[in-house]
Length: 79
Image 1: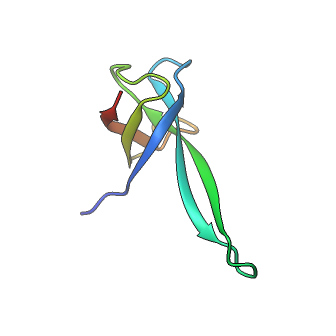
Image 2: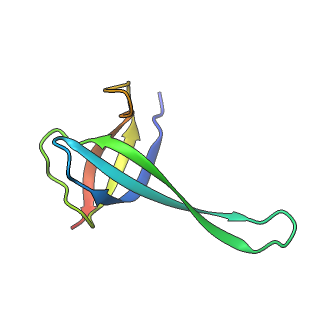
């Protein structure tokens, strides 16, 4: 079974064992065809509090952990 992964930047580490990860992606405007940068914020579980603000991390989709957390940090790519 394949699992969904994303790469993003940690933008908040204020909560214990929870990180807010910002994932950017690009879309083309349907009429004007300009490339637009969009982003989405995910709440990710970080069991050992290893990531800090500014880190680039890889997250994967997992079972619901809390009301908002559906993602888990699997590795820190860049500190």
